[in-house]
Length: 344
Ligand SMILES: C[S@@+](CC[C@H](N)C(=O)[O-])C[C@H]1O[C@@H](n2cnc3c(N)ncnc32)[C@H](O)[C@@H]1O
Image (cartoon, rainbow, N blue to C red; front, side, top):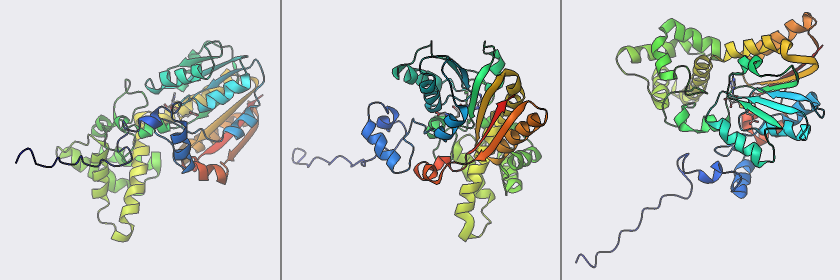
């Protein structure tokens, strides 16, 4: 009987990879060009990759000349850096900073594979607010593309989104500072409400802050991204059914953004960058900054206007927005705003 027993058919595991780790093809973009092209055609960003935003607009403004010295404050996947290096064409030098010690070596290898060497570029695993640590006399051009990269968002182990379950971390450099799950224990209910309002204009800041506090005080620690999502669901459970699902999704997006800004002290870093720029730009130096939410954009706008009034910048532009075509091709570009300035 045992011999005749039909062999159990192997369970069909589905055609598409279910986890980030399984998306191995997308994570090695150089080897799987066709898969990458197909994912991008559908308006998605392949896992392990980042699509650079407003590249043409930035390059046009920066108007890079041979032999110039530049700085990319936010290296990320290296998409913008690579374009800047193309313009330099093995003359001058590009410096780039990024807080992320996990992605930086991968990007370094990518730039090397593209034919660039350390004669062309230097990478610095530092916060861009410390850009005066870079040993240069001054920069001819500087750019920053604020926020997080798609690689960071798409990696569940980094805890940047409620869409995948993972540790609630949210740090761009996981070796520094404190992760979001611990930060939630440090903040009082009032501080949480203030943080959600200030960093993300969260409509339900009061309700979410109260629910987070209730949860942690009753011993239910918020350790994972899904834990936090469930707390937000509970906080908004009294909303009418017709708007509940959409409201929870939006509130989760804003809550994760607010927490990320707090954990990485993003406003403090941007403020310091804006303050230091006038001193590190050479006369005639150009700076282009891409922002992704109103708080960031306001800070950049105010700083450029302030220094223009002081006679530091001769020319200030923006906000410029991505074209409809770019937003169609890459929905992650939809909230981008570009502001630029030229040092006197
Ligand atoms: C939107 S991505 C940049 C993508 C890049 N422009 C490209 O084309 O691939 C933002 C990057 O900036 C880094 N970053 C954000 N804030 C930073 C800071 N204060 N100092 C250094 N790097 C920072 C993040 O770790 C992330 O890799």
